[in-house]
Image (cartoon, rainbow, N blue to C red; front, side, top):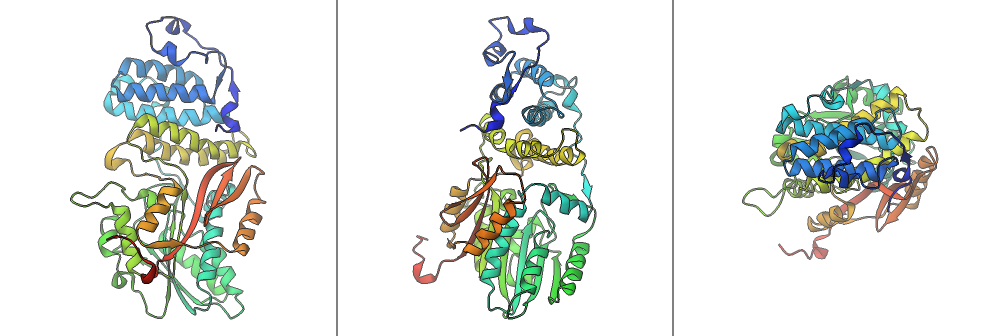
Length: 435
């Protein structure tokens, strides 16, 4: 099913039309039915044609399609054009490493995606509030955590997230109002974080200090810990009770927000499982009272470039379309947000092997992985669902929520975007997995 954005038409006159009049030129086939009325489907078709040419080492055809796309894409145009401009950058980036001379004359060849945009904590708050992409997961997870820690007087949250603890002020505020009084709260974060947006201009320690000040204001006993030895290379081997300084009298919560996609999913040499599975096994050994996982509902791990591009294009139009509904085309906030998505697109499309760090999987595949690892899903309570719906009411009418089994799914115009899940360990007497 195509979204409304995909039907938006863009009429753009093409120069050098003789390029397409040659029946021997395979580019003519790619443009059949598109010239003079280029909608999202046609732009996607051109991008796929370019990707296919790169996969087949057809530099001449790739150059021709890039030339056409360079005349159609625009970072200040409609959502189709803006999205296409970032895919073109990614394809040029990819091609430049294979054949540098083939791409050095293109407008988008000098991308500054490697330059990090550092935000203040205040700017990060505005970034998170822009669309419910992150807040949806925060709200759902916090609701599940709040319910799981009922009756506990000491709570330890192990936080794996890319959003610099922006989730926790809301939870601190909620537990401060608990009828029986707030528990003491300890939050631990690993020193390693995937090198992906958003980036901020303060350290994790400074973030922890700000959280501590807020917790003090809300009369919540609070500790914050950065686990310096828990970098990526040691993550699987050092995820242990001693490294995490677990305490017997604390209820352990493990929170994963947009995290698992950055763990390799390829099987480890000599093993039948991946790093992602080992991570979940290590988490299981920690015996958490709840594991919350939020991620995006798309399959971006395909080894085929063209398949990956098609999936990515049909998925990442969602934020581009959503931003179009309330921000002007030249809005700096909008351009910056789109640039961060462009950073992702370049990695997903422009790189392979260990350099391609993002490998999303669909929610149904993830759920099966969790069940295979010895977890069982738990439903979100009606109060949490009510809070999520209230949150979405603050945003554009295109946002919605649906339930799929025990998970909650954020939608845009009916299309899945982000899913939120909560998990507990399968009791030993119910664990029927075959070892």
